[in-house]
Length: 134
Image 1 (tube, helix red, strand yellow):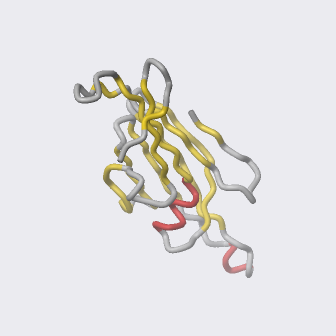
Image 2 (image 1 turned 135 degrees about the vertical axis):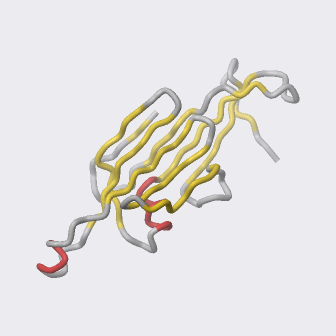
């Protein structure tokens, strides 16, 4: 599931529903939904630079997003600098990889504690009822 807002004044939010997890202690399959503010997360990882989503590609195990750095046209010199390009890959198992111009900035499991820009929700797969974890 993906929701992109083309208005540059609003942040793009991405939601990925992860694979059903069959955890015997819970007794039934669980769906984990991850919502990520991609431009906001990249802003944190790159010390305040602004980003915009310009592409996405979905595969069987993940969804990848292409983002570019937004330059404010303060001077003519800045407008000639090529914007940095980022790729964010969100795997269905909760793992995420973030590269900016080929340099890895994040490679790990995406959790609520990883970033203020990520929110995880859990639901019973059969009933759709939310699950609250302590």
